[in-house]
Image (cartoon, rainbow, N blue to C red; front, side, top):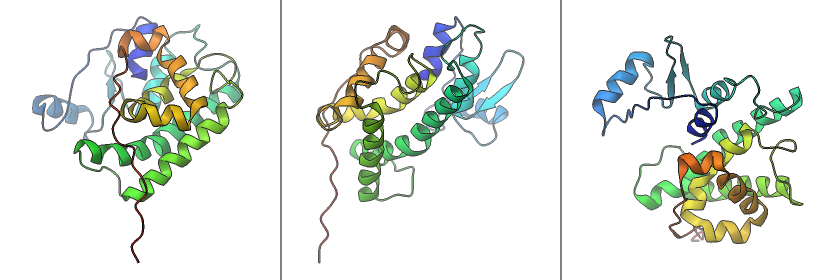
Length: 208
């Protein structure tokens, strides 16, 4: 979501190639030619420049405008942006996936059991909630940055699945999330967020 939103904002045209091994074998073989590990996303520039991993790709696309304010106004802003992006990709997203994927019949992609995933999700959402207390509008500084766009994109799965629980238990995070998600930059590429009200996972009681 973040990469597409930033590309559209900066007037960059991206050609999207779907490369799932099962559903798009031709696309997957094309992916392996530029990234032997088969990682997605993978960016290939018009000049053949290849970049992997979602954080550097997102920052690369955002930096294509010399006048962008989305990368912060100071060096510290930039490093704070990196911190929140790393938190979302390395901590928040695996926790969401660990809780959500089993509910929709998808294979677990991390070596973490159910209870650990639930604990991790609550801890990560709690960290966001604490940071956003007091009506804070943005994760970094006083204007929207790549951090807001990126974290909102990765957090959208939690609101898609459990919006009622998220709104009840994490009101500050919900306020911030909907504000960023409904900004024109994101809504133009993501559309309205579906909300499915799946059962929120709970920690299983130990049997003695």
